[in-house]
Amino acid sequence: MEHTCTTALPEFVAAHRRLFVLTGAGCSTDSGIPDYRDANGGWKRPQPVTYQAFVGELATRQRYWARSLVGWRRFGGAQPNATHHALARLERQGRLTLLLTQNVDRLHQAAGSENVVDLHGRLDQVRCLACERRMLRTEFQAALLRLNPAWADLDAADAPDGDADLDGQDFSRFQVPPCPHCAGLLKPDVVFFGENVPRERVDAGMQALQDADAMLVVGSSLMVYSGYRFANAAARAGKPIAAVNIGHTRADPLLSLKVEQSCAQALAFL
Image 1 (tube, rainbow, N blue to C red):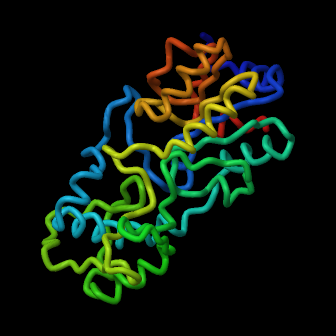
Image 2: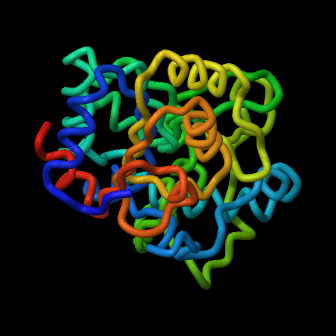
Image 3: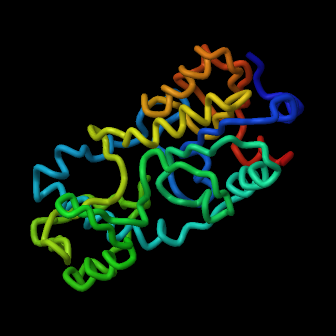
């Protein structure tokens, strides 16, 4: 496995005409969205909320949506960066079988990528767990602000996935709006910890991986199994894997090339 060498990645990309690309949080840090893990693959902060806690406890939902109300203002306004644009260019050249992203920020689509599967869903939508209807997060933000005007002026440090570090607040009076159609429980349209990735997304990824000559991982430590399984499948199929990531990845033993640079730096040649 090679480490940072300026020609290695361009050569890898040139040698494999059809790439299966998997991206993670490292792609979006230049857009002002923090990532989750340190260089050793450990958590930088408390683990994200679990599905079980969100569905099971009103207090968890109050805390989640209060933090989200504050964090969404910046997250919702994030713009694609050079990494997103480089990968969109690669797709326009007909070089990708699929871009499978673990990110929920839709910045790949904003940069012009079309053949994208949002493995973990999308934060710009809210889904009702009862009637399955979806509404725009911007619409839900307006409802949150109507019910909780006092929270509008709070500011806090951004956390991954569009929430904010609001510590020491009393969330017990925070009002969480129900579904406007059926009064059911609303949840961001993303896969929480403890929840399964929808089968059709995994299948679409595996099919695209089958059709590819090689796999390229950009900005992911692959510590979560939902992403790691694709590297595992590529290795089993004998397909070479290159990764751009600063620090440890769970797939290090499977890689034929590893570039320890920022994503934008590594993909600048595109």
